Length: 579
Image (cartoon, rainbow, N blue to C red; front, side, top):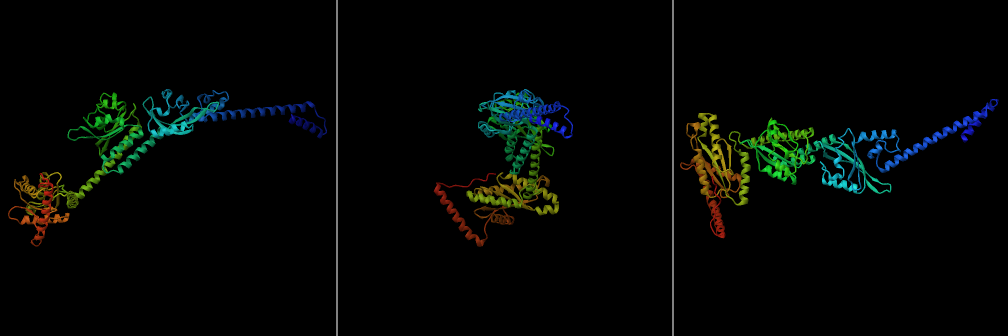
């Protein structure tokens, strides 16, 4: 009103100032009325703005706008104008795919799903259950316990990622956020929250986690068999699967045999059944399909598959979806991996990419180990005969002497030379000499025990190490048998033998107490055998100037052994070499 009076006074003053009378008092009144109307309109606009702010503050106290109820989002509350509700709806729906409410015991009561996200009925089955009572993937029991603790303390939580298989059999990941809600009296009444689909992001993270885990496991193990249980576990756990196994094909009959297994306790029936089987590699089976197609194979529900022979064990383990994929090395299937999960699930590109990634990692490991094995073999084995070379034999001799010393065994070293070999090389050529050396190696290996060591030191010199050698008579029997076998005719030489074997023998600890000393004395005995006109098998004997001391040492050892025999009540002898 004062503003109107001022306006009237201003009009009168203006008229008096220019020397003319005011046109009318009505003009001043009209100006005052206009000013009053403007003031009233402005006050009304400010009051409405304050009311909207109060509504937003109330909504914020009951939960964030991004987690509010569907009624508010669709303009159901009278306090929100249609313009405001439209803005809020666009903002919240652009960042979330599902909105939910729970009661005071954290059980879902309302689910609202955006049309473009999932099917409207995909989450109805969640009502009446708490988040940790629902089947989940990629969430440990500890994670659920921590979330329950937060909710029991009525604290807000944000972006709790959980994977679930939806009603269509698809693996989906959601990031859930929630805030506590109080009633009008300020008493806690439940939670309101929202969830957004993070499937693609989480799948990429899981794939990287699996790849990194497999890389670390392979780097820390020298053999695939040692690494495989850890590899299977690193694949299964992020996917929420419960069983994994490696299968190999037996080249003798083509059957598939089970190797390493990782299984959760609930999956033990399937693990036991797999270990006991030899599966035919047929195209209809899960593994056979992967083998013959050299690609991933999938079963949506293994217990219901008519071609799956382990269906009963899978049902007992409550396992359903399964896939198998081959590990290819230079185009050949070297092994197959199979994995089983607890849900009926559809195949997708995510699983296929994991299979390809893990298969490539194992393939590269296989190739690297093969290359390393070839290098190691070349460094430790004779290229012509395949026997251990001098370097590898010296290392094995040291280990054998240490074992014999620790266990009080006798070990015998037989040093073998082929008399007449140089003549074969000179008159028949090196190819004939190579044939003779290869045949000698085969005969030596076929005559002694698998636990005995055969090596080629170079040229026509071979050695045989007999661990737990037994008595001198046992050792002599083995040596004479080797001499007879090596002197037998060769078909490549017109059923004759162009060489004769000379064998020198030294015994640990009788003749030597150290590896190289034992080798030197066996070599010395071999030269005595070459000079012999009778038997070409000779035990080591010390030189004449050392013989007295040698005999005294032998007598002392014999007396000690006899005393030990008396203590245990009878005569004993070492184990036989057994050829």
